[in-house]
Length: 210
Length: 221
Image (cartoon, rainbow over all chains, first blue to last red; front, side, top):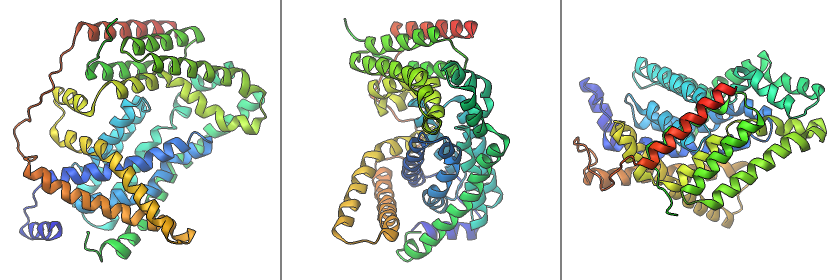
């Protein structure tokens, strides 16, 4: 029902821009899938600083499916912002989001929405670029290691860690690591989008779900 | 003593003040004062067990960070120092968050956001997401059970789990849309609610207390 509707609307050149009730429900459901995957990696990131730094990338790798599916189903402005809003709000209410991540998420959503708008909400390349931009939002989580570097390490030092140890730990807050933090989501988002595409081809298109 | 019931808006503002002080450099004394204040709030709201759990948690965390990790071999402490230090920094947010989740419902929460003029376009998907979590869990359980009946090679496990899950999510979205549209989800007029939210004197007292603590913490930083 949905594909024929959008196709005919596109032909007429008058795509209904407002989100319908059905769109809102689709966004809600796929945001739930997105959040669960996101949360799983958030919990895992406590195991090792390296996992934390790679967390935004790992989330991008695995959430390609819900994000791309939502983009296919809701070809309208606002879908990505709502997904970001839901994620940020749930994290904020549970106390796990600081203003820094909220800001990063908001910026990432705006960039992703702009990319989708420019690419007319269609085409694999455009949606992938939007997904990469959206994935960068989670970089705000480990970012305090760099931004609040002094406060962070002052506390670690005051906890009685040896200077030797702090030097080891400081390696995680180096500039190369900062580059890894921001490069990983972009690279892995592309990979995640490709996985999603392959899976859609193999299973969902045949079943007529897209 | 009758326990107080905070307005969800108060809890959201408390969370914001907690995240303001999160990354400030704080002395142990200030930290203890803030954690105690949060614990007292949890008690006042009628959750003494929660308050005890979080207070003990804080003591354990500080002991771990100050006494246990420094004597452990470097390879072990590298693993935990950053995440535990981070947890200690956002501990207040986690405490208020735990209280927010236990003491308020999704309905009250969305009503509060509605009173701040957050549009329905955001609130409908939000309610759907939160209410879909338990369904997602049971669905995942069913798929896992079904997978156990068949010998599925490990290389295919992820795919065999993901595909039916996404299929069911898509199907749920379709069915739910049909039901919701029938019940008038697309009605442009603001929906009414049986929930009447009002800021009480307790709410204002809590907020005043939070602001005072916040200012003191900033002044001492």
